[in-house]
Amino acid sequence: MLAACNMAASSVGTTGVTSATLSPGAGKTANLAGFVVCARATAAAAIAVTVTGCIGGTLNFDIGVAAAPAETIFPLVFDLPLCGSAPGQDITVSLAAVGAGGVTAVTAWGVKE
Image (cartoon, rainbow, N blue to C red; front, top):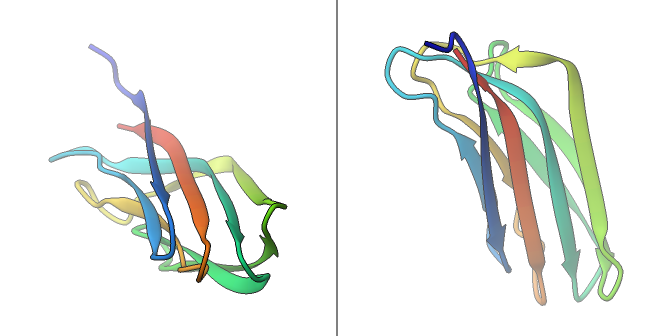
């Protein structure tokens, strides 16, 4: 039996909030190893990326989103995975709405143990 196994989640969106959620299941703890967000919109904008469910509370990042056809790609890989705040606690990476003409994607990966 494996003590830990990899997990990943991915989501695509348009003009609303786009989120990827790592769900460890009952009695397991999720650990976030990294994420990447991709976005573009009709007009350039500054938007928020949030990570919830980790020990220490919500993490906040502000990124600039490029006007189409350019695309912003924001990857973040942690040297050591961030631990979930409790067994069974989901870890969610969310990209705020980018506005008109938005095309977005969020992918998160980690380990559950």
